[in-house]
Image (cartoon, rainbow, N blue to C red; front, top):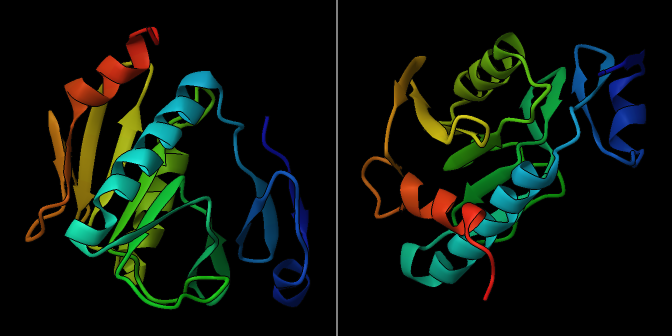
Amino acid sequence: MATSTQVSLGEYMSTSYRPDREYIDGELRERNVGKWEHARIQALLAVWFGKHESVWQIMASTECRVRVAATRVRFPDVTLVRPGPQPDVLTEPPLLVVEILSPDDSYSDTQERALDYLRMGVETIWIIDPRTRSARICSENNWQSVSRLEVAGTPIHIEIAELFAYLDKPVA
């Protein structure tokens, strides 16, 4: 179960937490811990994006702090940005944010995170649900179930069936 603690933004920004926590209007919020399928999908996406960084002109990271508003800092499961130097805490809208649902995540918490990203200026958010083997693209506050995740106007994509096939198959 997630817990919260009140701290200043300055204290939050100068402190490392294990596991990291989000900062929402003065409150530290623990994220639900990703279990095997969550962690595996995060790793598979990091590898997928890593293989395409030079071709797609992107840089990928996992669990990087993103300051979505003056009093809010999130850390998406996977973040894509354009190439170039990046600050320790991203303040410019990433090209893509990916949230992978954990078994304990609620719809309202996920929607709140997605709205924060949209308000920041992130144009595309992918929501992946390992339990239901489904995915959604969230853009302009519109959630659309899809079989292919993509970022409009770019070559960035992944087929959901292929992603879950890697999740489901044993390594030979």
